[in-house]
Amino acid sequence: MKKAIQLMIILAVMAMPVMASAQSMNFGVKLSGHDLQSAQIGMLMGSLQPYFGLDYYSVGGDFGEGDAKMEASAALFIPQVGLRLFLSQNNPTKPYIFGSFFKSFPSVSAEAGGEKAPDEVLDPIKEALGFWGLAFGFGAEYAVNEWFAVGGEFGLKWYNIGLNDVVIPLGLYDPTLPEITGDFSAALRYTYAAFVLNFFL
Image 1 (spheres, helix red, strand yellow):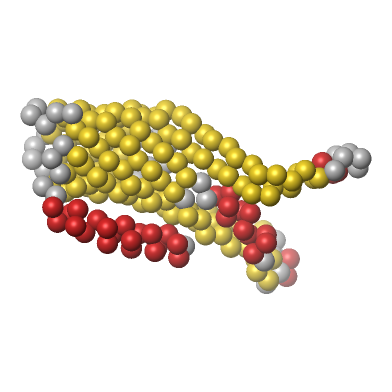
Image 2: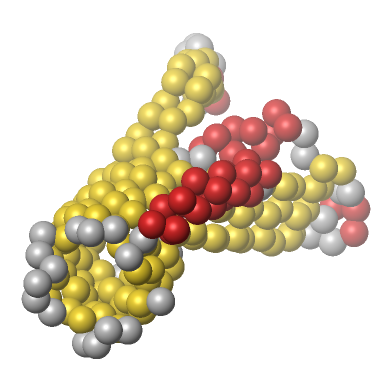
């Protein structure tokens, strides 16, 4: 959580000179149904619009009672930064292409019988939840008036997960087999479509 807060402070400081030179600012929301989306704040500078946003997800639960009670919780802070390039600004309908980068900063805690789980238990979970990704695609927005625009976009998202020193205990299934230790990486790629609402500030 501390890393996520520090990153957001750094991004805010870096964004100050950009905001000062921006022609206009907008607040946008994407409605996609299944995708990880966030509200975004963008700054228009000519045909370029840098933007940033933040997603937040959390889950928690408990099991058992008394001294045998187990509790666990996890939270994900997912800041993102991106850039749109508008291909035309002379018409009410403005097509654009975009690209963005996002990174997950997880916070995990667990407790059993009144004792907190050690770092060696929580660190692999944090590592698994600490994914990063890219998104790029194209879209268009239609300016209803000078304060509001609607639009849609189609894009490709790429999530990347990497784990170091993963141990696979093959001996659980066959005592004659050894443990296998190595690095693990996985990628998830998919396309998405989203409905976009933009409010100009």
